[in-house]
Amino acid sequence: MLPQLLFSLWSFGQSSMVHGTVTDETGTPMIGVNVIIQGTTMGTITNENGEYQIEASAETTLIFSFVGYLSESIVVGNQTEINLSLSLDVTTLEDIVVVGYGTQRKVTLTGSVSNVAGKELTKSPSVNVATSLQGKLPGLMISQRDGWPGKEDLNILIRGNGSYDSDPNDGINTNEVLIIIDGVPRDNLSRLNPEDIESVTVLKDGSAAIYGARGANGVILVTTKKGSKGSAKFNLSYSHAFSRPTNIPDMLDAATFAEAFNDAQLSRVNLDSSRYRPAFSDSAIIKYRDGSDPVLYPNTNWPREVMKDYSMMRKVNLQASGGTENMDYFLSFGMTDQDGILKNDPP
Image: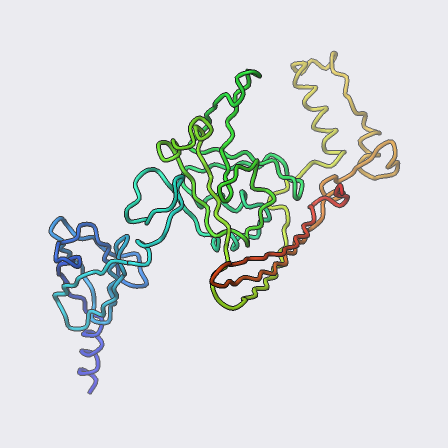
């Protein structure tokens, strides 16, 4: 019994070479299909004839995937040749993208257009819609120049810095991106509730030409949610988030700073002790360190004094939607309460 048991265990872990061909629905070989061993990073891709070859054991599951097609999972078992046909992911290709002159299906879309669904924006704890777009759309660069809650100074650029003269009389150029919400130009996205957004589309280069000079720096199109025919639907959501500083530098205390400042002065006079006049005396450094005179010789840790350990943010949204043969409606009510990280935030 013992030799038979050892042989069975060895056979179970043995690998063999698996090969095959991957085609599309029309039988055309597919180039560049990913063939991955499930649960690992090991894999290969199909060649120009749709053929692949990979070493796998009997219990291995192979994952076949390609952009725009449904992924397939196949257990190897005792097979040495696995041929299959991938099917189009109709759901993805039929997605509707909003463009400047209406809507198009993603599969027929040409031009430089990026799109993100509103449900992706609600996953971010950020209050500002523009901040939620960071990292979600290629070519869109967003920088935050102010951390005041509710009044973030955001700079939005599409594919770098550009400019156009919005008013020939003032002689001032601008690099502002054109923002259009449901067909109406707006100044910014700061006051828009992420829960009300259906989709966000970014038009770049030639795809923004329909807007003329105003679209020279790119266009951000926002489509909000709408009601549909049927009985009233209610949606209530609540989120609670905490924020805290991610990186606070370790600052020198007053006594150590005074000693370092004296050393720097000594270096500037090229070690000539006759010209050296320390800015802080030994007695002053002692008072900084022992805290005996906190008024004249303070030793304050300002980050600890002015900043909270964390701040809270709360969001509540209530939506009602529905419609009849003649009309539809979408009502949204939201409340956001965001605390700053400073202990004495301005109102």
